[in-house]
Image (cartoon, rainbow, N blue to C red; front, side, top):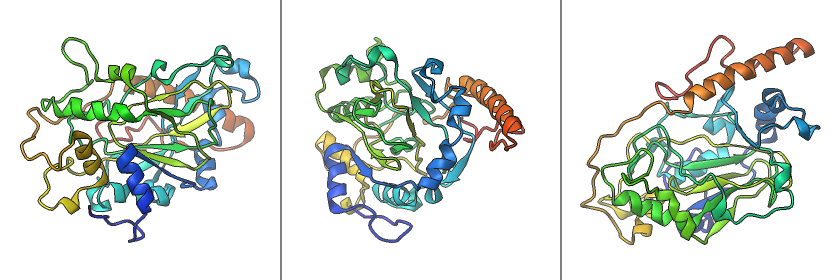
Length: 332
């Protein structure tokens, strides 16, 4: 496998980290975001939420997906994680420099509820299992969601709403798409059976707990879900996609050139290459159904940010100050 080029022109991952990705489908990059960038993207989160951080009675929603107001180029926001991303995907030259080229402050917030303080729940019973990618027709080799990066903005302890992943579910997702070269938008068969339903048969679950600034890089088909925040310690993270210029390639003439994502996919299928496999559908991108809700949320947050700025004498730091920006060209 080719190491690929990184901004530092040297391997970003240790051999142990590479092997961990190949065995488990994910890897942790510790302390990959500076405290300054964490502060830049999260300092006004309570203003945007419209909640009092010291009064839980104002926390009306358990989980909130905030839209993006600010963004910074990947390599500037988290150079350490960016180097690892480039290595996992076979080199920076493989990554689309335009679409999702920046990290944003679209934080996913998990505040928990009082009802879950003393309760426990098995991971397979969580209610939000999914794989990312609601804006393109998905195939096994799709490059639109080349990795699932999860970036922690605060310390996340066990039972505090960490993202939960399902390692043995990854195998099923890969095989499911391999067997459906026609593609799938929702990963649901015509009879209504969903690929994600395999979670009910899985056993290898991992809570991605960590320190502020940690970044987890997961295989694009890794099933994951928010867990319950029993402790009610606010959890903030973000997840910005990484997009390839071209689809993944599972039939390279030189096996050393497979990226770690390609190699992990092939290993899950138990093969060294897929010379006969090819898609039979049409690649397409589209506006996700969540776009309208995000636009409405942007307007609400802007009003709160303006009111706060007027009260404190501050400024409104948002790309949307003069109108909503479609920050992912023609898609989101």
